[in-house]
Length: 572
Image 1 (cartoon, helix red, strand yellow):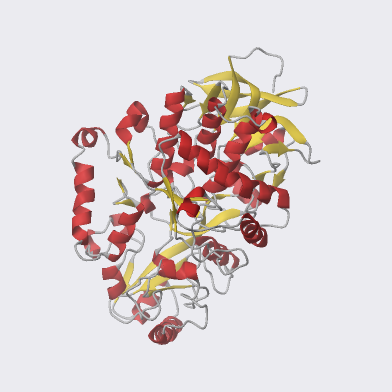
Image 2 (cartoon, rainbow, N blue to C red):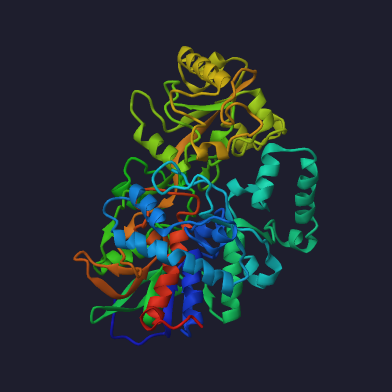
């Protein structure tokens, strides 16, 4: 930690990590006249945020109000409090609820990012304070032209394979539904997407990367454009090694750049915004021993908890390190991370079964709940990791199943996908292929088909909740999530208990300041995003519950360290 040596560079604010929370903290601090530097461990910027859908969960926003929805802060607090872990203080939840709409207002005023509130139900909308009509999830709805980023375009982390066409063509939120349900003349929309991508001839000669930035890429692209305009530098390939402490205060950090150790001073503070530890085998073994496989995480592979380790080395406290943003994932051979399974499970005509051939959960529940249930149900007598998604010819023709593309013949699917896709003319033959008792699987399918005929699932209530129905097929009646599995050939595809990141981390106060084991503030050190223990505890209230708090507390941290919270002056 070498407190006495001279600095190689000194700034007001040093931000570690280039995801949404870190870039927004840097932008707000810069607007408040601070000299800011962002450093990024990898050779790509944007973090897991860039690979995401870009949604942020923000209660009581101006956008919701403009849509005619009058949200209530007390109801939002009640909803989060009902779900969040008991060790998360009330004050932290209230700080988020109060600052979140203010943060979004600031972003709207100071960047080109355009957010709309969506009628996207809360994941547990039936609980007190939950909203079945939604309008707490906000999406960046205006695409950004990547050419505006110049050379920074090529180092933007690309979007996830799970939220792009053929793993490389970016789509807008509305295009997802067009491709999913294929309404009349849907193919014209597909042709527009293909033309948009392939007509960018100059880029096609350089790279497969799509310069039509949407979802998480649009969010991060918009933040980077604003940072570039403000003149804030972002260093790539510059991992942090340790924090520097002087007289009990964090005064900077040691990073490496171009093979050389550099001491970077930070007069006002260091913001840790470098993600969780989902891709650290060592930390997973220590804190999440039942789910040790790093490739089952959808978080980006550089998230190995370096900054959490550095902070605990100077006495920082941690909370809920066993917790993840749980999710079922597809694990395709050759891919370095899991593909989040959001929509497919709710579509009519498929089920999930354990290795005893038994259905054991509501497939259409939120990915966080399904991921948690998969992990908790993984017993020696009936393993659930992997489980199997079972579907028939009709489903295969109508809908995607992760990387399995509808309308495309089996033999044209990617070789890695074909290697794990099982197909048979009967349920019993399918069961034999995947090592499941055929009688048990046939009985499970028969029972499910009886439920599908009535539109009611008394075992697990699939399709009852508002969230379930959002991802169902509205053309399927009486239940958009239920259809029988009857037409051969039958298919099975493995699905694993995974995550999209860890959400336990450093303990912070209402201003995102890191605390030590005695609850005392470590002066000069802030943490946001998955570096910090989430205000949501071990829960996932709605779409955008990762990025919403990350950006909110990034905003709060920057204002606090630059004096805006104390003086009450407006951000410049």
